[in-house]
Length: 602
Image (cartoon, rainbow, N blue to C red; front, side, top):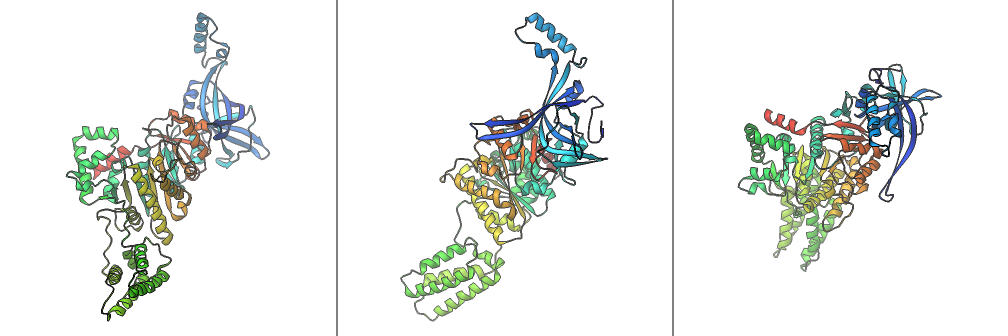
């Protein structure tokens, strides 16, 4: 045996196995819509109860493969293990019951005590090959190499898995199930190349997303997170962060109610175990309510206004001038035409949605030039006996916006549009824009909000390099990127915006994170732009096959998620792990425990 205790684990000499058969497996689902291929293998191991117990946990097997350059080890991930007794193969229900009972008693008494017992281990090739040189292991991707039947096989140790998947100095996001090491990933790559959480109700999607958001805000400087929250979960799950450096925006006007704290709590989906803790612990209940009261007292809960505000934008002013060019008053028409042409030449490259007040802060020379042009026009009209009052009023309005005392825009004011919130997240004018939770419970309004938010983020980023990295989290993603779309319910607009986010966002430092339980009816083109997948329990086979195809792994591995408990996930990533597409099972931290601990410290 080679490198026992280092890269291989023989379970104290009890694990002895060889490759019995290998095959290329093709899986087809729903009339050929999804066709998946994987290289499978069956290993035959000596029966031992401790070996069987170990194989019930996630495991990796390396099979020896001689080559012209030395010994290589092809790495397989186990799917299942089945204990076999030779005599059970010849037994069937046609045998008399008494004889069957005798057979069964004899079989049970011989487990581990006879050469007629063994363990069949069903596995899938990971595509990686390991080579050993002294005390070092080297891994390379090689999907073409084939194993030799009869070759000896070894269990990979925790050290081998650590070197295979863990990023040195990476962020700990969970513990590897079946191994001693935690999973450490490249957190920047996790969000830079987009990620997603897929699991049935109760799998812990919001818990996992909350953990990821916590790690991002604590580990990545100059990164802000915007969560579009349809179900009302993150105002509670991340309450401790919101108090310190976050803001809640909502389409529901809580501050207009007599008891905003009670109304806010009633709107949120409080996790069951946290609710039990609140109800059973009077001290914590008071602390919890005080935290929300403090959030309201510092104006940390604001109203979302989905009606666009254009009266103080360049586009609106130019449209006014355009109408004035057609005015019946010839003087008004002449002056408006001249000024319109001058302004068009001056601001032609600016976004039409930019507000006049922003020009003074971001483009002071342009603002000064516009004011001078307006002064010239107003001076020209001074000696006139009959001045065009409407035109004069518009000129003074523009001048006041550009030359008046600059009042810093305050996001605390009532009714913030999605465009306002996008600017707030990117400009970072105060300490409460690190985490933005946009609570929009109505799906149609959520789509309206999201497509405008994303469009504005792109518009702003195209004109400015500075500003933080932005992560947009879409909870209940099936509401935003369904495969069947219509314009009247805004599924078309949100689909286009989210797909743009996932396709182009990386180069603008705008990233996406989606969470959903309904994979079957999602826009598959959007899912395939994701590079990191967390898969929990998905009862429908088609859902699992969609993830398997998008992630590029065997559906046999995805099928194992049916055995997962709450908080356990299959993690696959093209970019965030040390080597791409190594499926690993992890157990994540409990966000509720972190929340309770942090709130008690406040």
